[in-house]
Every structure is written in C-alpha cells, then in structure tokens.
Image 1: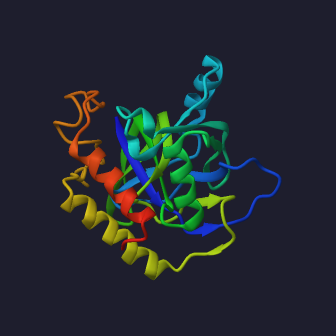
Image 2: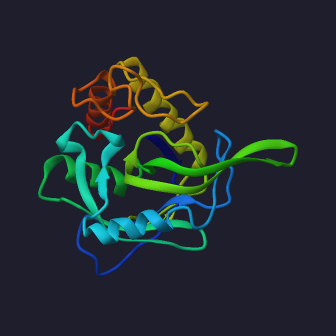
Image 3: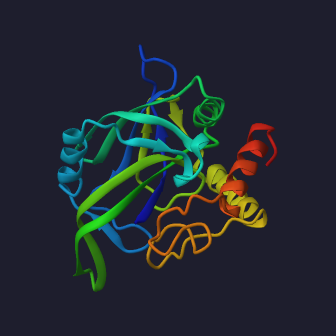
Length: 231
C-alpha cells in the first residue's frame, strides 16, 4: 500500500450543500510529482467500478489513520475520473467531534491538502525529457482524506471556501506543521518510494497494525495546536 498527498491550490464556493460536504480533485493526471510518478487517465477506472459493484462508499480518513476510528471522518458520495484527474464529492460525519473539527480546519485553510491510499496494479518506467518516470497505469484506490503535508502541487479543493490561497504563506505554515509533527515524534515516509507508515506503526505488509503509533498522536496534537491558533 502506498500514499500520495497533494497541496491544494484554490478554493471555490459551493451552494445548497449540507454542512460537511466537499468536492475535491484528489489526484492529478499527466503530472510528474516529487517522487517521479505520473498517474495516467484511466488509472482509477477499474477500482471505481469495483467500489460501485461492492455497493460500499470509499472511506474518508484523516491522514491515513486506519487504526484510529476517530479519523474515519466520512464517506465519498460520488467519484469519477475527469479531464484533470480523480474527482470526489464527499460528506464528513458532522455529528462526530473529530470530523467536525477537521471540517473547521478545511474551511479555514489550515488543513488544505489531500491524500489517497492505493495499491499499484500496473505501472511502467518510461524515459521522459532525459529522465525516467514511473507511469501509474492502474491503481486500486483504498481511501481518501485531508492531511497535513502534501506531495503534488496541482490538486484542488472545490467547495469549501472562495478565493485563492497565499502560496508562500501557506508553504511556511505547512513546513511549521511538519516540523511540529516531527518534533512530537511523527516519522515521515521515505520519499523514494512513497510508502506508508514506517515499521512500528504498520506491519510488514505496509498496512496499519491496529496499534496507535507516535505519528498518529503527533498529528492529533498538531491539530489541537492548530485549533488553538498556535503557529
């Protein structure tokens, strides 16, 4: 299992939607990210069909904290591939405290990045402009959700707040959040392969072990500090 996360670059207002509902582009096609991966159109087609066949909603999980039920904050209402990438419309469980707090951060822009978990079903290395990139041709989508730090600069959050963000200011704030999480004990995935949580927070399979690790607690504390307005 691997993760990909993306800073969100703009917000647009959506009317006549229940509180906690949002739209987002959670993956961008034909864009080489910081670990040399490029997702091709059609990569999610089979996986989305499988989710529809199962009749189960794709989970919305904060920062991939599978082992923390509080972090299971909502579900995807609609998902499809569009020209730009993978579009989702989702609803957070606003009757749950943690989900409600995450929603407030998304509205304020302090949580303005998105991520998804996936397994690679088909990929190949190709040479492009003198460099090798990894084309992701077929992916098994496992879940999506907001997170603190991202990887790809071209996703969008649609439907939370109108107006463009201050990219420089946001980048500085994101770095502060990242540094705070690390100081509190969080561990970063190796950038070379984009793998999930390190050994100790996940089993050898790469999937969460069911035990709360330092990264989970660090993320929760960082969220508390954001709520308190501490930079």
